[in-house]
Image (tube, rainbow, N blue to C red):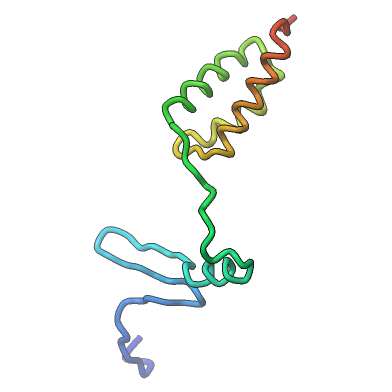
Length: 115
């Protein structure tokens, strides 16, 4: 393209349309840290505590696995258990609360069976 058009080499891409670009030998990372900080400032939450707390993933996986086994005879749980199964890699408190909600439902419907 340099033959057909006048160009100058500005080096590796670092910022494009508000997206921060970080490149190294193994990967390229795109993020909007500056934009995100502006949104947080706009909301007046500059020094807030983050809320996406991770939970003990092993316990989460154990509970979800047990619930998945329970769905063989409880198809009423299939959708909700399938949904929470999507978050096995990095579950948060929100996901843990969803599991507890399902467990409370199961506790209230112990005698449900597949007929």
